[in-house]
Image (tube, one colour):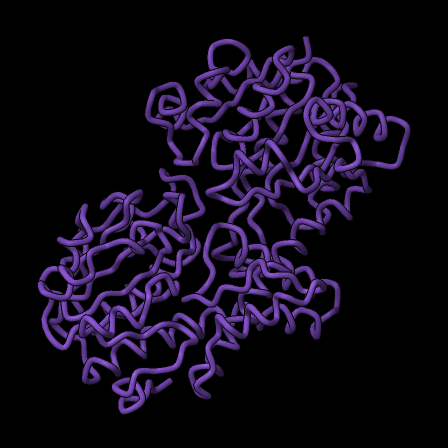
Length: 480
């Protein structure tokens, strides 16, 4: 029986291994992590991450051929294939701080694999890593190999949160990079055979190691670039009276461009886009390509500009001050159908409003108060380190109140900010919300989910990103 072990029971490791176990009943799959609380959650009815469809997959396989354990060394030593899916956060200090990936967790995983292995192994990079990481890991393994053969493969994940299970069941492509030696090709074939249980062979792309590693960074950079492109257009639309939805629709009809990732918003978030672009920038700089580095930096600059612009619009619309005013924040996750708040635009928007002494009332159907308080108190990049290495949660921010109902959040509020495109926000009783708000009542739609005409008919002053401005907003222009 082939045995697979995955080090790291997070957003990538958990769902990926659950689907492999479901699709390959003859393979034994173990997911290991040093976090006792995380493994306990994976073995309970309340999984540590929210992902549509994940519950059913885990419950079908858990205890049969899918196991979650803190006994890392035992499962690694027994495995034929070891996936490494540990965090690769952006460095916060030292060489490359603020850009380079921190490979501390990766390196300790590699050293542990070398220490406990008694048989030949295929080691698979599953985390997003900078180009040439495989080479570094290969050196650590071979220098500590004790005669054991390690083959390194790069198998980047292309999951989108909220649709991860569907993405795993029916991927656009599976990418496997390995050495161009007979042993390397044999290792590629072994991993390809696992995926071929359910993925058509023509969707399994095999390449060299560097191409596989760079493809992941490039894919995320291209996607983020599309979002920044349409967000840049949204600012121009507001200035000229154009409607960004109409512009994006017309542009997306060009089959060379296509309609996906052309929704203007308050900005992109999530654990990968910013981190991967910063990584790409650092690699370009290290390879003497400053022009290329500067090109990709602009994608992040526009994203930051969009969040700042949104906050400025709120403050300027409300008589140039939000001090002491209750502002309702609807949605805190970085997108709908996930509880993930990593790099969510909501953090920067909330911090911007708190800086102007606003009182925030926050509601998100999947994010709890502890997480929100932690995110608002944390420094940039700290979120990507394990909880026990994060700063102790400081005293909660007094100006922030987290509630479990949109109507409670909006009661007596001066303004409402929609920061996540949860479906429920489209069907709220906005007449009821209006009746219970202070007047004039403002709605700032950072995801373009509401029908502006209907809300204006109720009496709201509405700001939707990239849409023609209310007369009120024109009279009070946002100062950049």
